[in-house]
Length: 590
Image: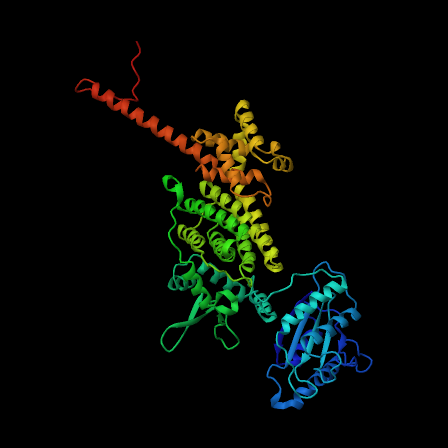
């Protein structure tokens, strides 16, 4: 059950909307299910008293606004309190009496009209759909004082959690006050009216997150924002120092024609300028050596940076599992930046799912747990490297290293879900699992081709070599993993990887033990895939198995051509003076 609270100044205008047909003719049978005294005029049902609903609507407006007019200048400018309450998809249908009980409990919990208080605010509950009601109250009490509405949203949320339990409804995750502000109904309607797929608030929140991902300085952060097409306005102190910033989308204007500006702090709690400065200071990006990838000159910058990010992401998963010295909380922020970096540089085939994963995990980066050490330098450096390397092609080695990174990020987000669950962070744990689900979809898209090639290569190996590697798997892998995963039926790609590692000079069994010892497999969907990518990263094998074959073929062709040219030069040098050797000329018949 989800409450959504807003404030306004036009009682009559809101009632006209609630009793009207709706913006898409979605309002049906609008009627009251409850009111402050049980006898409020109902424009939807009081047809017998007055055949003109407009007259009844005017009477209802006057009744609600009575105390507002009596209070005069003491009434608040935004005197209309509006709360929509919606059941979750799949919940049973509540009848009017049950919705009346819901409304009474919410106005009591928020302080609008406490039970037994004859001076409570006047309110009504309107129902024009099966799954929700609208509670409208005017914020002047019977004694002409204003109600105390501190933390009304939190109180409404808490009451909804109790109602869900008592009425047998789907129990949603409790909030903790760290979530980003949801778009208002007006913002949503404006997005629909202007043909935007989402509200300006949501678009700007994502743009700011992506701009800060791996940024090295405040200046770079603002430069990235402007390059992304976002309007930026800084707020300065008398000394000239920047105090904050506002952002707006080009073309997004209010009724007066002025740009609609959003402060960073209103996009999300951690996107204020002071919070971003802390992130830039604590996690100043430092260049990280790209491990052994440096000796692979044929790999693109994108492939190298993704390999480097995979190693760093694996370390973050380990830190989340151990949570020693308060190191886990800052890892979540760094992982969020890494996801944003990958999403904005991903190929078209995976971009949608990766953007959804980054957006979902954004909720998992904020909780009330404060980090003792906010060291995110490695993750921020990995994000910076990916952004600077630019977009991946989505094929060949780039596509393979993307699959390698996504396989690891799935485990990282699941480790984050476990970390949050252990601390009772229900919303953050749910967000982490959502991110993992999107990453799994993106992984399947990125890994389809390289894994298919590996399976073919594994099946093509000589039977004796296959049996040797299968014996190594049975000897090294935990028995429960072999039994649970049915490894023997799906080990072709893993066997092909072990064979390639052996040809590259590695001890395949020792390499396998190293990959297994890195961390647990309990959260892995497919142990085969996880091991394949770990082994290929550790052994510095091409992430796309076809790349190695292509490079070998290219090297063979180059060597053959070079040898042929050398032979021709030697033949020319050995020929008598004055003769020309034509390599294409046929020898005369004898």
